[in-house]
Length: 157
Length: 157
DNA sequence: TATTGTTATACTCTATAACTATA
DNA sequence: TATAGTTATAGAGTATAACAATA
Image (cartoon, rainbow over the protein chains, first blue to last red):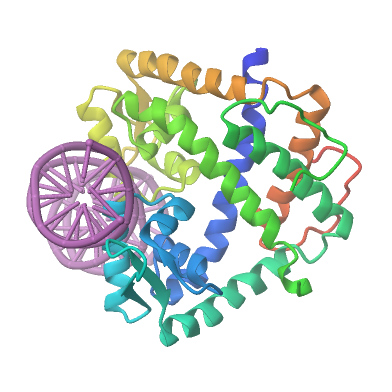
């Protein structure tokens, strides 16, 4: 294998892990009538006082034009609500309604329970190793290139 | 943190890694006028003699109804071609055309080169550690639960 | 002038179910 | 009867650009 493709196996594994996890969690999400994007929003807003479109878009990687549609549908379902920001009148705060909170508390634990079963046999060391390697990976990826120093001996985040 | 949520950090990291990687590779993919699903097909067909819809659907997790549309658009662009299977006349083989092969050889190396830069400072040990943890993760996820034995001392695949 | 969010457009993906032709 | 792929439907996500209100 050419050295330029050395990382491909990792990326393939990464993609397969995500696909697999989403396939498992997707059942619970869809059972509540939520799409993946909608669940992303609910999960992002859960346990917060709300945030602006800008923040929501940055966290979920949904562009503003698309976000309006997703929020519209969630608002129509009565799961989120818009409120004008006091500081900046161009801006809206989006937050979960009482119903939205309820959905969050129902769906999220189901996904958590499913994940808990998957990871039932992971030890503290297994988790630590997984987090350490993923944290390093995340850092180089989000930097768009290698970091100044890659210290593999301690936790990065 | 409740023990039931111990794995959430890993999943968040996993999702962020994939998001970050797709954000980087997405540029190259879109620059060639391909969508993510279309690139999946091109990448899956690359370096193969072709495969049936069933196989393509299984590998890319695209359901058959959707797959017809994706293949239609790729065929319309002249990147793939259908050919009736000899063994089973219900079945089609899908393979890259010469143009499709060319696109594969153009786009894929660009994504590879981008990835190579990202992973430039990864050592052989870094790759081994990453693959080992991801392989274990993939196994428990695809099994939908814990594996019979989780042997963390050797490579799983 | 720049930014926040909306609207409009056009396309793609998605799941689902009914359909055909083969097996 | 069961399977491979198509078609039809309806909804949802996506990028993009033009736009209004505000900063």
